[in-house]
Image 1: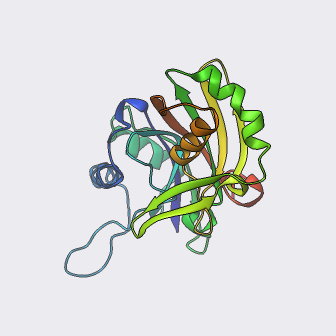
Image 2: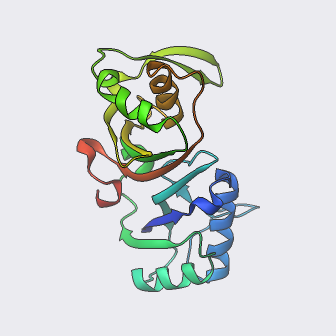
Length: 219
């Protein structure tokens, strides 16, 4: 069995990278005394998995990790012990015991919702959203490890709307088949709005979804 854990990464620690975040969770689990399962072999390590890494500089409201268990523990006890070993900026919010056969969160991931706080040019970006979404295709330059590629991100934008004077909310594809990162969306939206450069933003991932936009933690 394994524990499906929802945790939060506060904006204050948003510049911590994924590997550092993983190490922090591993150390906390070791300190907690919880019955977590380790790999076999010469150098045993925690078999910890995350639904999707957070980009450096991004906060997360309901991030998901899976912790394999070596023996029984209640969900309440798990939360109490893990939170006692974690910093207040990285709290675990909920925990649910699932069978080992339960589909991996990473494999079930389909989309994610984001909140983008903008420090300038927010009005121009808000006003550009209707005509931006009215386009049949939105071609953007995606940078990957293998090089640069032009992609149509329009089918990957499930929702995009203004939320307050200086905030935009969006739901974007996030899967092996198709992914549109918030930075890529903002570059395309800024170009459409006629801005010479993208304003400074703070991005928070609010929720991750499976198919039919069901919250991943509920699958």
